[in-house]
Image (tube, rainbow, N blue to C red; front, side, top):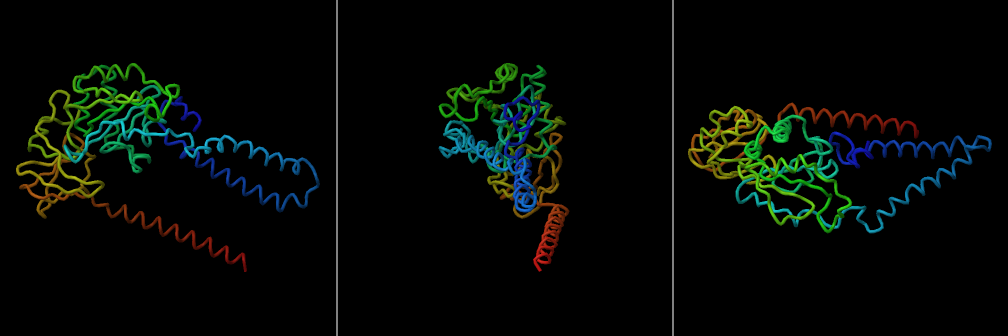
Amino acid sequence: MAWAAARGVLPFGLPDDTLLLAPAAAGLALAAGAAVAAMEHDLRGARFGWRQALLPLSVVGLVVAAVPTLALGETGRWGLPRGDFETVVPFADPQDDGSYRVLWIAAPEFVPGDGRHLVGNMAWGATLDGLPTLGDLGPGPDDGAAPLVEEMVMGALEGDTMRLGRQLGGLGIRYIVLLERLGPAPFSAPDDAVPLPDLVTDTLAAQLDLRRLEGVNSAMIVYANTEWTSVRAAAPPDFDAGRESVADLARDPISGTAGVMAGRGDSLEGLVPDGAVVYLAQTHDTDWRLDVEGERTAQRRALGWGTAFLPDSGGEGDLRYATPLDHRFALLVQLAALATLLGVALRRTVGMAR
C-alpha cells in the first residue's frame, strides 16, 4: 500500500508513507526478536541442516536490503529536497488582514498531512495561516468542512459555478496552491513532477474570483481568492441573511467583514468593533466561547456550518475553546488503563525473575 501511495496510483489520499510503514516496521522488529530467541534456544539442540545454513543467508539479506537506506543517508538529507516552499510562497501575514486558510491540491504524496481524494490521482489538504506546521501533518477529522470543500471544488470541476472563490471564501480560504513537485525549483527536478490534470488547471483558471499570482516558482501555481473572508471576522449583524449555506455565497457573497482576534490554537484575543458580530469559520461547536469585556456572548449557527457570536457591545474580546468534560474523562480512563497494564507487566516480570 505504501508503494502504491508513493506512486500516486491509488484513487484516494493516504497518510505519509512513514505512518503506513509503521505496522510493517513493528512486525519486522518482532520477527527479528523472535529470530534471535530461536537462534539462542532452538538451534542449539537441533541437528545441522538447512536451518543453520539459513542463518548466514538471512544476515547477508539484511545487509543487502540496508544498502539503499545507507545510500540515502550519505548526504544526511534522506532523499529530501535541499529547499522548501517557505521562501517562494507569497502568503500574506495573518496579522495584517486576519487569519486565513490555504487549500493545497496535488498528488497525495505532495499534499500536507493526510490528504483527501479529490479527482483522478489528485488529493487536497488545508492549512491555517500559510505553510503547514507539525499539527497539520496528522490525519484530520472526517467531519467538519471537508465535505463542503469537496462539494464546492467538484461543483466547479463539473462546470456548475464560475464563482468558486466566493464559496471557498466563506470557509476562510484565501489561497489555492497547485503543486506538481515535492520541493521548489531548483531543489526538485522536473522529472519528479506529477502533472496536474488539465481539468483542474483549466477550471481554476476560468474562475472569475480567483486571481493567479505571477512570478511564483515553477513547481507550483498559486491563486489568490478575491472574495475571501477571514477565519475570524467582524461582520454586520445581517451578514448571512438569506444565506442558508456557504453554497449560497456564489450568488450572494459576504461583504463588509474585517479580520479580528489574533493568536493561535484555542486561545485568541482582540478588539471587537461596536455593533458587529464575530463570524468564526469553523465547524459549529458550542464549546467555543467568546467573552467581550468579561461578558459571555450569545452564539448561533451561521451559513449552515460556522458560528456567529452576538456581543451586546464592542470591546476587548477573548475567544477560547473549552475541552468537553467527557473528552477529558476519556483521556483519564486511557491513562489509567495504560498504567494498569504497565503495572501488571512489571509485576509479572519481577515474579519471573524471582
